[in-house]
Length: 241
Image 1 (cartoon, helix red, strand yellow):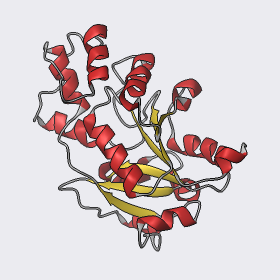
Image 2 (cartoon, one colour):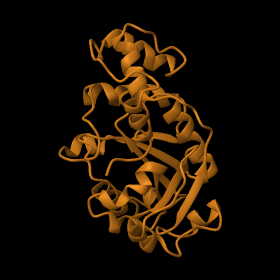
Image 3 (cartoon, helix red, strand yellow):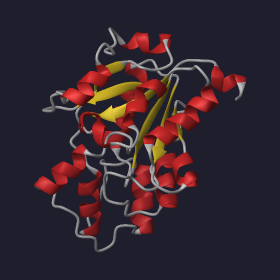
Image 4 (spheres, helix red, strand yellow):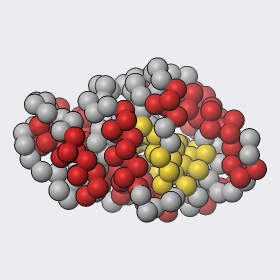
C-alpha cells in the first residue's frame, strides 16, 4: 500500500456497464464528486454484471469511451480492475481490493436509488457498509423505503452531512441530490441501431467513437419511453452487485 493512496480525502466508487457512457452518468459523477467532497471518483466498468443484461459493446470499447469522456477532468478516474479481474463483477470484491490499497482512507460507494433498494439481492451485501460509506443518488420519483432487512442493517448509519464522510473510513449512509437528466444508455443504443445520431446525449469524443465503431448495429433495443427502457434506465446508475 502506497503512502499516496493511504492518505488524503475520500475516494468514490461509481460502477456500471457504461454501455455507452453518457451525460447522465457524467453529470451525476461530477455532482457526487463535488457534493460529497471527494478527492477523486473512480468510474469502474463492469465485466460481467450480476443483476442486468450483459453489455453489448466490447469491454475495450466501453473502457475507451469512458477514458475519452473524462479526459480533462483529473478527479474522475477510470479504473479497469473489474475488466482485468474477469468473472462476475461483485461489488464486495471490488471494495475489498480498494480497501486493501487505501488503508483507512474513506471510501464511498455511489448507488442509484433502485440499486440501493435492491441491495439484499447482492452478493455478500451485508459486508458493504464495513468497507465503504453508501452514497445514494436521489432520483426523481423514487422514495427510499428500504424493507425491514435493509433498514435493520442501516439503522443509525444516516450521516448528518456530507462532510462527515471524510471523518471515518466507512459505515455511513448519505443521500446526495443530483440534477435529473432523462438520458439512458438503452435509448442511445436503440437510437444508434436505428441509424440515429446521439449528438448532445454523449460527449463529442464518445459520439465520434460510437459512430466510427458501429458497435450497436441492427440491435432492436427498447423504444425510448417504453416500460422496458424505463426499467433499464433505472438500473444504469450504481455499481453492479
